Image 1 (cartoon, rainbow, N blue to C red):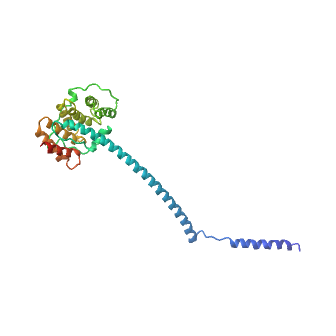
Image 2: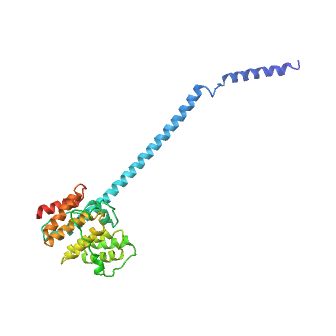
Image 3: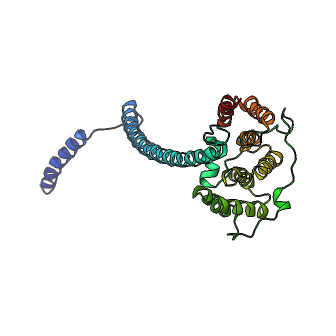
Amino acid sequence: MQFTKPLFLLLPAACLSAQLWAQAPVVDMNSPGYRAQSGGSMQAEIYQQLQQLRQEMMTLRGIVEEQEHQISQLKQQGLDRYIDLDRRLGSLTTGAAGAVVGSSSAASVAVDAAGSDAGTTGAGDVAGAAVAVPDVVNPVAVNTAPAVASNGNDSSDYTDAYALVRSGNYDQAITSFLAYVERYPSGRYTPNAWYWLGELYVAVKPQNLKAATDAFQYLLSKYPDHDKVPAAMYKLGTVYFLNGNKQKSQELLTHVIDRYGSTGNSAVNKSREFLRKNF
């Protein structure tokens, strides 16, 4: 009788444990159903991450497109300013000859408007071209340029000199560019400085066509692969015309068309227009 009460109490507890054990599900982690459920959860998580990355990429793409649009607007503003300047210079250059001079090429606008080098456009083969360009002596070596304050940096000095062109101070711009080519004979922007010297010698009053010819010829002779070569050849052709050498002008302008006709350089169209109006 002493063991009856404990046994009576243990029996319900055992039955309850068996019932709870029967209610708890038994899961085989190696079963296909369990693996499918786990894999589905991982795929859903990966899909969510991909969607998030896609949204972030779309946001970044929108930022990039907006920045590209702003850069395009800045380039167009620089181009418009340069075209206006070149049109005014061109009207001075060809006013006596009755020629129409348009804007310079878009490839060289980046150099002149921003004061930086735009690189090479494959304008070489001048030495072996149909129209020979004489190897002229550096004009600065003959007439030493006057002293001009320098920042000690070729890019900064070029920007300062070109700012004088944009402001219409042509005489001061000539002085600054002469000092520049003397100070930086092998500078990155020296070919551009020679080009502007040629332009400015025609733009000033009275014109100095001899100095303009020397500047353009020096550029063509010393830097035959520079991107300014087509424009310089066109400008030199107009200077020959102003000097009364129509045959040489026609030959050089025709060479610009033949040599660069397939490049899309604006000097080609300007050469055609000049020939049409004057020959």
